Image (cartoon, rainbow, N blue to C red; front, side, top):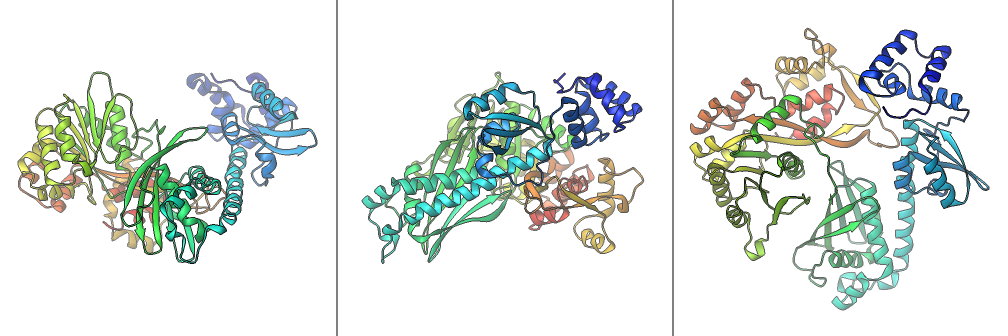
Length: 588
């Protein structure tokens, strides 16, 4: 059992004396604590018998130290940053007030003497520990980002001012190649680019867009699938920034007429991050887009990606087969690669040989042989796949089926004793069948090789604060245009979101609430999916060259729910909103 900061018997006595918990609730929580091996207080808060703040206030009283609530407190960044963010997050400790040689720190565990002693020695200050709760700590940790934004903005503006001498009447794009190289290594430019990259990582951005306009340069970050303006920079820094990015990605610094692609890595205190770079000539100069890939991204599971239990069973059933194809479909940025890497992680055992051909290799996985496509030297998906088949693989992943040759080779690989994983760009699972038939794949070969097709999108998740509501008649009428309400209600009942006899008036939905941590009420993303299992009836439809509508209709009769239906269920669970589901499926 995890250590409690207060002796259980002492906590019990104070809980009963305070009247915060009834004796019946306390007895039940003790039994649950023994079963689950969780501390008593964790069971009580988890089951809603006491709020975490009330519990922490009581613990603070027992320990004889003050309790502090930092949820609405603005901490001076100079004080906050006395403890570096990685240490603050790892040890759950926040510096929030400094007086002369004393530093008050808020902690979840004020008896963490090792951390207290480390900070005391590092800062040379007397440390005064205070108890706080998780919500309070979370709000304080968020202030690191706000402080960083201000700090980064100051750095960029300061460094940009020092570069005014580089601007010219002809424009920065007229700077010669040799001068560009010097400019790319100039300290102010190096600092600006480092700042842009670090702030993007702090903001959890997936992409950085650096866009030249006539009189300025705009930097935008894509966060949770939505582009946000991050910074406006003076036009005179644009050539230096693009040159610096080219140097980092090992691209031709003086080539401004043609698109270029490259890659580079940086290491932060916590992880290694890879940046995939695309440079494109545009009217006002060159635009750079950097895709951010966290190489240490591990621990993904099908549950965390948003798959329901029945869907997970379907995936496991399909990938247990030693032959056949597993396809993931959806537009660019819908999380297809992450799903495939998660499946590969499940399959990655010592008794199989796994080989991939990808463009690009997004994450490096131990024990998997990963090959990068290089069309400029003739290394295409088809060529790479042909070579892989001579490497005695059990499992093959093809990054994307783009053409007839790759489709034919993938089908043949699945026919000759390999499990093949790949992606396609189609709007729905059923839409993959006609797409492959268009690539001249024979219907009978398709029917005999494909095990399962997964289609997906990513929706933003509601952050912690949300407001419950129920659909009005007008909203029901609007929803009925996109989904069969009777069928949808049955699916919601099946997932036990409401009771077996409840109607739509009992189905809850939620609006997100804005908060300092989530300005638009959303944070992070999760997948919505549809799973098309190729059953005997679906095989017959494929051989008969049935339309995608006919295939989808039959799959729904056999239990498949569509991405939209999956999204509505997640909205009813309070994970996302109906508006968000409609936003990402509106092209359907």
